[in-house]
Amino acid sequence: MNEKARQELCNISHVHIIGFQSIYDIICELHTLKTKLMLFGKIYLEEGIMSFADFSILKYLANIVDILLVWYVIYKLIMIVRGTKAVQLLKGIFVILIVKVISDKFQLQTLGWMMEQVLLWGVLAIIIIFQPELRRALEQLGRGRFFSRSSSQEENEQEKMVDSITKAVDYMAKRRIGALISIERETGMGDYIETGIQLNSKISSELLINIFIPNTPLHDGAVIIQRNCVEAAACYLPLSESPFISKELGTRHRAALGISEVTDSLTIVVSEETGSVSLTKNGELHRSLSSEAFKELLSNELIVSQKAKQSSSARWNWRGKKNG
Image (tube, rainbow, N blue to C red; front, top):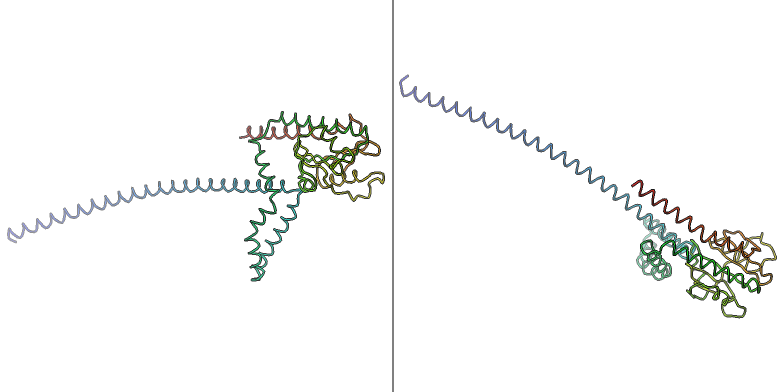
């Protein structure tokens, strides 16, 4: 082998050695890059899983709050329409919805189209039909806790109402002036208020006495007190159909028992024949009450029970804050 061939062979070997060394370096770099990518991917995956878990927990809590709020709104709506004609209308709406579902399931096209039209225009009909209930709902919303008066002011108004009613009842009982007074509590009495003459007046003994004076336009019927105000007079109340009512009791006592059977109201009766004072609640008749017994019973039902509700609510709120 000559010198030139030997020199070329050495150059070729050197190039191959350099080439193999470069490939090894590239493989090492690729392995390092792979390791970094795997580590970065693992960290990113763990953070993604944690973020997904946090998002799932927040979504789960949001769903719980959403469901609780919907149930609370439904509960308040039921409390507002309870004891009013809206209950029967709601039953009619549920019947329409059931018929719509059945018509869709069995492909009753004509009936389904009719139900769609009813539901389409039902919103406007609900606004018109439920106008009194919607107004009352907005009023109750305005009288919510944020706008509510203090408990001491509410208690003072209750005491004034008890004193006014007691004074008027004593006056009418001594003179045998017949009277029928119903005090709304939790159950709404809007349907019965609509049957009378709306007054919306501040309660006073003089006003109550003047209403029940014989031969005056408003003396025949019941006075309904709502939220410490004389809301309406000359109202018609449902008569009790109980066979156990004494025959000596007249129409006023039957009306007082009748309204106490369908609502939780307190109803006061002054007999124009004997001048005796009676009070009904929850279908029970308390007869021949003295002035002191009547005032004590009325105070226990209106003032003491209200204090108990407020104290119970306060304890519940305090426990909630303590646990929170």
